[in-house]
Length: 351
Image (cartoon, rainbow, N blue to C red; front, side):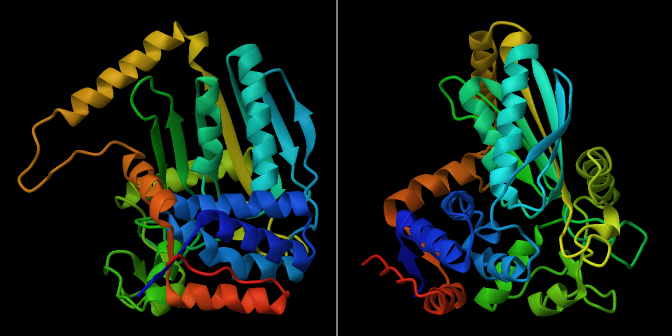
């Protein structure tokens, strides 16, 4: 039976492990909040499953102990931020806060980032704009694991796209998805659970479709979402997050021989103040109308509910805040190993 843990206890555990490893306490708390926040929303592929790789990357010197982002170019509506090889989560919060500040002043703004690292789940940043009645976007590139249509070799990463849209009485719309059929983390989750994967997710090291998650991870050849359309979107994301701010792009992301001992991951964030385009309350009322109209559409046979972007994740968050976060046995073992390694007490699961 999969154990469930209180989210706050998992967050404290991850923060304590990172701090004990030598990470700045503020950075550790932010990274832990991002990881457990992904689990709360049912995005287990970007949650605590990544703790071991995060710690290992840090101990190898690939991520700075304290994140100190610096603005290196700026206009009233744009900025480029150098994360100086810091942690992706705190650096990206800084960048998104800057985009929101600028959008409040000029209506809409974009901020690119270079020399960052894995930033967790993209909606963590896009959703920051919602409380300001803004549309928030966040995109990032990643190490190569997507096979462009027509090739057998990987070049782009999963390169997710996130767009968050405020609503009035309804839940906000939150789209956050990889440009591959699934994020690589979902294959890692299947591997931890010892479950097969669909054959349209990835290729093995010989370029053949596989249902074995271990073979898929070894091959690092994920298939693009919707064929060539996902590949095209991944390219666009790489231009915005890699080429535009001067970060690594394509096959050079996370190639340590090119960038010393660091990944040089790139991100791009934007904020749009809906009030700059008209009455913000009217905008949110119109989004409410759209949500209700979609919910009211005739349903296909066997379908009980039509979901809009983000609704499944909001439902997960409600359930996991109430009943705890499920942690599969292999991930639980990884956390216990890290806790023991750094002298941190592992919390007890919920009864």
